[in-house]
Image (cartoon, rainbow, N blue to C red; front, side, top):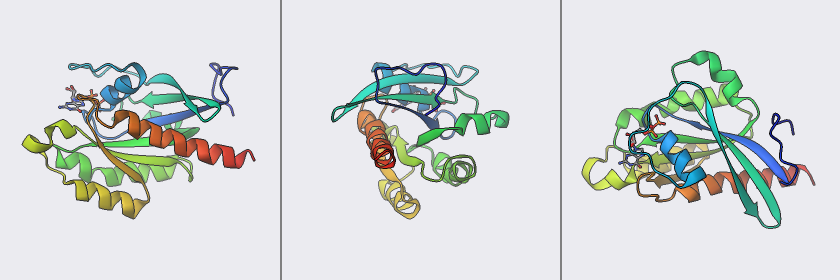
Length: 185
Ligand code: GDP
């Protein structure tokens, strides 16, 4: 695999995955939770693509996941093709307290199909589940049926309370690992 300069000899697999979805749905906070187990309450949208690494052991294999975040660049369409290039997985994130972020998933799925590889593993993530009782605008059933229709995995998460974050990333990573190990048989 060609994944840039940072290939680590010690890991068995290295792959790239991307975070996508509307601004302020919680992508940066999901990523910092997953990569450093931190939650930043006032994360500032920075300019430029950011990414984080995390090593995960699946069976006897060490996998290094390189996860890219748009870091507030959703509006710069020029980065689109390089952002998706080589990505084997995507977390497609919406905010359960903002209906518009769910409606926009159609646009994100179109973009994924246009620029992403056809066997990309996509996990649909409804974030901010800690606000479900007070501010929910998207029913869990809506997320489930979209996921079923599009053939995606689905989870609701809270980056703030660290609910299901690990599960969402790990479900993507283990599926990618399955696909990669089948290919290398
Ligand atoms: P991004 O633009 O998609 O990367 O979103 P950010 O990670 O910057 O988060 C946008 C805002 O939502 C910030 O004010 C976060 O503090 C807040 N936020 C992110 N995740 C959660 C969550 O799970 N629950 C709640 N209540 N707020 C969250």
